[in-house]
Length: 102
Image (cartoon, rainbow, N blue to C red; front, side):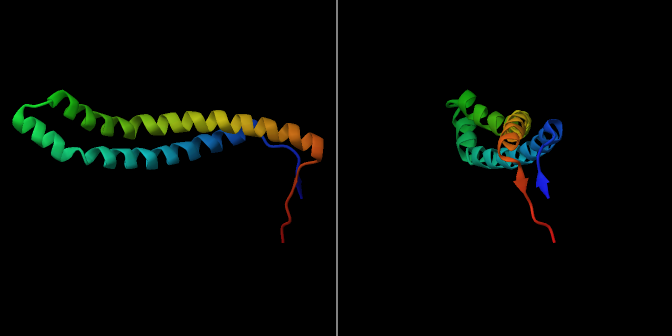
């Protein structure tokens, strides 16, 4: 079987879904990293020293769970459209990708 063409919109949907899942993983990792700022936040609140900066760390961790899946999803869609279009062009020149199935 030879794959001669990839549906651009099909690839875009798949790339978007994969991007969202990778964004969720990245969002969780960023949130965990910024939750390490917890002792700094507690110290800043207790001493009234640099409270706005400490609060910013907590907000950035929470925003990562929302912003990163959206950004990675959009990036996945755009990248998949580009990759599928390039594949379709290259497959026209060299004949496509051969896959052996049993």
